[in-house]
Image (cartoon, rainbow, N blue to C red; front, side, top):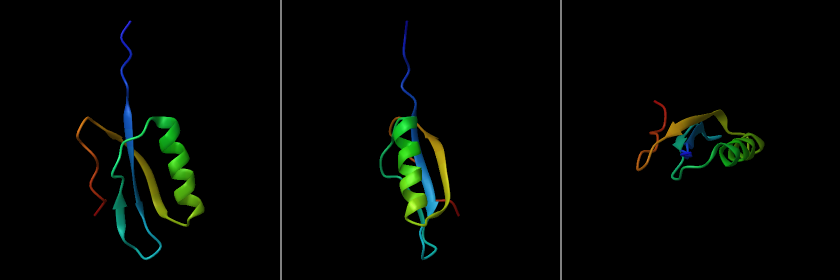
Length: 61
């Protein structure tokens, strides 16, 4: 049996309106925890997006 690791990153908007994106990839559980931290910090538009090896998202335009 082959287990494939799926990676996820986050995009969000800071309180000052700056668009941000993760600099690291996470497993889903860790991405959900990070999204909760961003929510607590007041970040808007928090979204978990798929990330591939060597590929992280750009901040949303």
